Image (tube, rainbow, N blue to C red):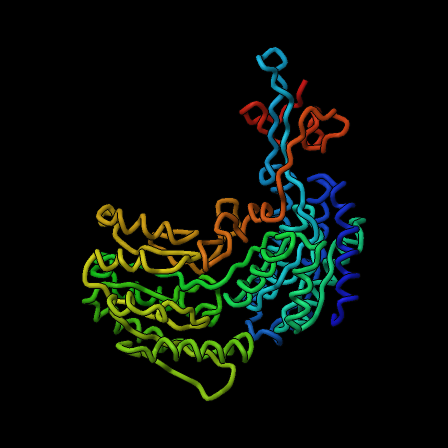
Amino acid sequence: MTSQEEINQVVHLAHEAFRELRKSNFQQRAELMNTIADEIEALGDELLQTAHEETHLPLARLTGEKGRTVMQWRTYGAALAAGSVLDVRIDTALPDRTPPRPDIRKTYVGLGPVVVFGASNFPFAFSTAGGDTASAIAAGCPVIVKAHSAHTRTAGIMAAAIQRGVKKAGYPEGTFAQVFSNSREISQSLVKHPLVKAVGFTGSYAGGKALFDIAHQRPEPIPGFSEMGSVNPVFVLPEKMKNAPVETAQQYVASLTLGVGQFCTNPGIIIVPEDCQEFLTALVAAAEQVAPCKMLHEGMAEAYVQTKAAVSSQENVRVLMGASSSEKGIGSASLALASAGDFLANNTLQEEGFGPFGLVVTYRSPEQMTDIARKIHGQLTCTILGEEAEIREYEELLLCITEKCGRLLFNGFPTGVEVVSAMHHSGPFPACTDSRFTSVGPDAIRRFARPVSYQNVPDAYLPDELKNSNPLGLYRLVNGKITQEALD
């Protein structure tokens, strides 16, 4: 896809498909999503082998990610069909009130064509057929995916499966499309196109912020949801460190190096008490057991090496372990150490090294730990490791941390992200451009929908979810009470 003329054609097809999607109800779109899920589920070894060759990810990991991807489509479809995400609200007329109250009903409608930029680190679950695509279609929006250049063959196989599902379900061709280009101009043209109404992005801060700015600087600004960088700090309280230094070190390294550190939730910084030699010894020992592995692509590995070097070379930063490999494209576990004072004085130490690099920050007092919590940028996750009894002494720390993250963990590690309705995978800037919305879980659908109220509209002209007869069998908020019953 290299020309503006071709971009125009794809976007116009999506715009035409949007008109048809607007006519579909929640149940019909859920059926479309399940049909697409069936097509993805039916993909066999070709998909897995191709993704393995392009990303170097293990087949077992890819098998699990494929299952998660199928589950996302089905879960979002089920939430849509139940009405639990795009919640329906009805306040019936009160003609005898003074003044009389009109009949007012509210639902959500899709924004229009959505451009999705896939991530490199999850070729299935956050890319062509990922959560952004699934949630946008659930909202009633056609999707145009800008395929990630790191796995174009994988993207092509996934796109073909989605297109088969769209055709089988009887929806227009423009419901889903994918474009291939390494051109920044093409990416910018997609976001700038006047018929495009929203953008979803997962990736680097530089890329996500640039697309967000373009989306908001258009003559008609549009929502741009970018999930970007996060170091996901872990705060270790004194009693926890005293009671479990070795276990804490081993669990931290396991989470840090999972997937060669290429998860958006790998914990890149751990904040520990100053007197922690047993922990540091166990930390290095655990990291030395982690074999160097190929990263997603050579560009990713080069960026990892550069960021790791930039942090490690800062004044008063001590390298604890810096294994390296002469082979290009390899990611090796690495650890560095800094004091709380130096961390507070140097913003470079907050840089995300997208790979298996961990920075240990030591504090002298609870006040220093709280200062760090105030200093850190917005994060997807923050974690507290502590004994239950001592957490009561750190109320201010807890309040500060909660202001900085989208998900707070206690005595666990953040690498796993469950696809459930209570999950909030987002966070204050610069983790994301809008911390009110999530990119994981059924609530992700709301990013691509807007509320519309219908006042005194005859029943025959209402969307199905607002009709008196409740033909979809939804649970609805009627006059302040949740009910599944039809209205008189």
